[in-house]
Structures are given as structure tokens and as C-alpha cells.
Image (cartoon, rainbow, N blue to C red):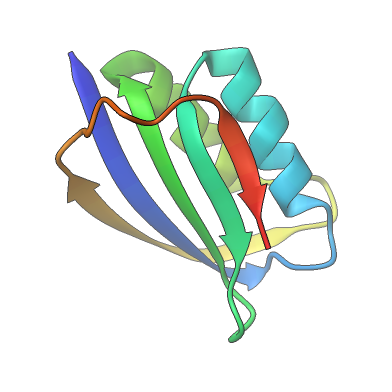
Length: 91
């Protein structure tokens, strides 16, 4: 089953390679979407794919790269669009 989620992560998640970590995790799990820094110091992610792959991706980004510290993750379930391809970094 295809699912989609928007994740908003707080903590030390900028200037630690988080976006590139998310890209690698997405490629490994075969999910699609995007990751972006926000102006308030958080990271937003939209992820879409098979439910099990999205779960594995979410577990990975909850840990983050070694220099990161994820304090909070807000999760919003979204309807999958089926139009998302690849996983990109948005500026």
C-alpha cells in the first residue's frame, strides 16, 4: 500500500548534513519526495512510497546523521499523490 507523510523535525537538524542524509535514506528505501530546511531552523520532509519503506525511512530520519539531534518530529498523514518521483533537496 502506498502512503504519504509530511514530517517536520526540530532540534539540531540544520548544518549537520541532514538533507543529504535524508536523500541517502530515501534512495536506500526506494521512497520519493523532498526535504528542505525551514527559516525557523527545522527540516521538512514529504515522503511517499510503500508503507514499510516509509516506516524504515522515518525511523532513519528520527535518528538523523551523527552530528544531528532530533528533539521532536511532527507527523502529518497525507493522501498519496502518485505523482512524486525521485527524492530531491529543496532550498
